[in-house]
Length: 251
Length: 214
Image 1 (cartoon, rainbow over the protein chains, first blue to last red):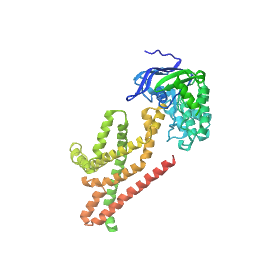
Image 2 (spheres, helix red, strand yellow):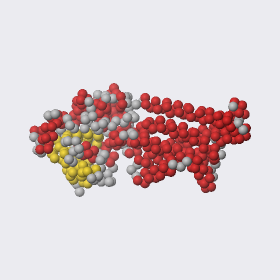
Image 3 (tube, rainbow over the protein chains, first blue to last red):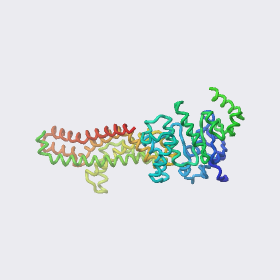
Image 4 (cartoon, helix red, strand yellow):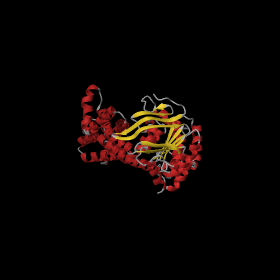
């Protein structure tokens, strides 16, 4: 059995994930402590998204233990919604509720999942929208927003649940170049908060260097490297990571 | 035609009431049932999927007349029901199979991102379906649902075969007693239009209105 350390927000123990015969995650062992900001990088198809999606149960794992906020996701007795309440996720394609206004997107889960009183909920939602610079869009429908604005609403929506951890799955990959800066700045501000655990899949190397305490490099479903950010960018240990960093930095 | 209408006005009016009532009941009940079976098709339970599939395939692939006759001739031996009830039940079940397919197609076109966004946000699968997926699915399905509803109203003429007292049944009676078949059927044709045209208009209106809401 795996010991449950209160300092650990997310812990992978011998995790294996398959899509049919395809071995998507190979023997993952990883611990992310509360308050850490970890960036996950690697070539496409390396399993980064699968790994991050496994953390809130969007991808079931086949073997091992995945302990999030004290609950083992691979234990059938675990109520997945208890974990999702505490772990927010920001997607590449935003996934805002298309049938709800901006403020309703932010207020919905706190209302029906956490049963926050309406007045308090609305006050906090407006505060969050203000924080992402979109208070004036509270009444708009998502279809009226630009990609960058949608992503900022999605971030506010995640924050509204007062999560202990936030997962960012390539949050700027679908954005126009001029929108990326704003979104990254907001993520950086959130990650700075010492109570928030952040796990970020990204291809933005400068952002990774600025925001992360730790860098995890993945390729072919394996974690090849797990180092302090400064060490990683000074000189990655593995050849594969060196190649990758050279490629993305010199394009 | 006018004299035929005025001399049988009461009969036509009562018949119109029966057709309207049968249509409204069947419309509401088949939408509820259809949605239920659409959901049963997508829930993660093999048993539920198979039951829903069987229901839909049976009622979608048998002529409406046979379904209605079954309720009128067979079921009525066990539970005492009249032609109107038997016809309306048959019409409901038959239409619900088509609505189930329409709603399921709507649900499938909503896109997995909406579900993932909601589940990651902490919503249960039922909350996700009810609050996020179904409203969007219905919006997509409205043009097709409109067609189903119009067909339903027209198909309610099947009640004539089981003495349902509807417009078609009355047209047959009036035609038989007055020997004026031509005008009898034209009159009920117009009565059907009184229901279907506003219904059609309303569905179009709903479609535009919801599109405006983005």
